[in-house]
Image (cartoon, rainbow, N blue to C red):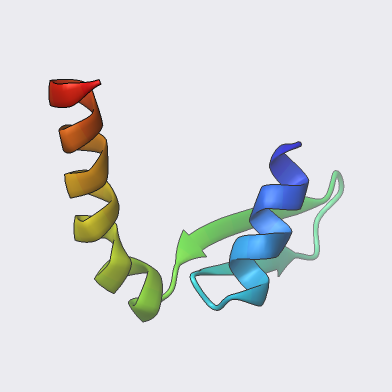
Length: 53
C-alpha cells in the first residue's frame, strides 16, 4: 500500500513527513535533500525502462 511505501522512504531518509494540527488531519510528504539527490537516478532508470522494455 502507499502508506507502507511512504513509511519505508521516510525510514531511509528519502522523504520527510510533516503533520499539521488541523481537523481533519493533514499530512504532507516531500523529498529530503537525499531524496532530491537520488531523483535523477530514478528518472534515468525509468527512461531506460521506457526505451528498452
